[in-house]
Length: 427
Ligand code: HOZ
Image (cartoon, rainbow, N blue to C red):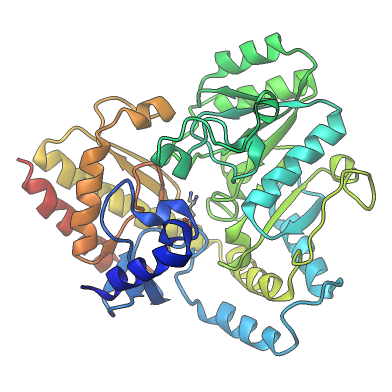
């Protein structure tokens, strides 16, 4: 019995399903989740000391690899001055100023403690600002687990094929309208059917919770135009893409402006943190300036702030990081593509910046239906072959792989070789 197996058995007695976030349970890929002990750079080490090349990177934030020394040192130093005040600090101003200087269309920012909180609060703000109740989200997009977003959601909801979430009332879901990703006509139809009722359109500008799904040319621009015409608040959920695709996130990279933007784990360098921001005209409706209430004892937590500041400053001051991330991801893409083509398996690889996913599909994967109709059983087998050989992929075909600068060409070559060996068994 491995240490992970022992720990999983023990965990199941006191933690529902043995994990604190469902996808981690390996339920869809099968087998026992690997319990991690430590990580450094591109590698994670499990409770038995086995090393894994990490393609999850804590679901995005470890852009510079694990235990990035300046972040670790900043946390260590700050912790000596207390881990929480529940009172304002100068650090929070520095963080807000830095985000405003990096992100387009963000005049003001409110810190929270997770991406879920950020999206939930941004939606409330859009509703408070417009005086409207309904909003549009896209099938397979995941905006955290606040009630309103758990309709046709991606990530674990898709992985476990949960159709309706018990506990989310019909009254709440009634105001959540959904459209397929990349389907502008479907959005226009919803807007026409609910004229003057829609507060917001929220989207992952590059979706990362149904694999990596790329917006088709004109799609985001079309949504922007609809929002402008109908006075709808356009929300970019940049929990995964923010500061990862570019210093100014997807807004900068895709050159589409949002009215509100949500951020998450990336801005804390892996600490539990989130934020939402946008134009001052909208943000001024948040309490205590306005009456849209939102609060949190741990919001602006000094440890999270110092970790995030250190990480974001590094990204801002070193634009070459983005080229390196792109190059490494492209190198992985080419390698995987070669191995998949050699073995003759139908496949699609979606890549944008340092986000990438492999789908065993004969058709383009540009929305949730396409991602769901791929041969995800084959993905599960690939996952286990890689895991067995020390390559840690997301344990679901409905998640994106994230690349860090710590990953070496040698690591990528090895990962491709393992994938190739597995794929050869399918010939
Ligand atoms: N929903 C997260 C990824 N899209 C998974 C988070 C986790 O299990 O840590």
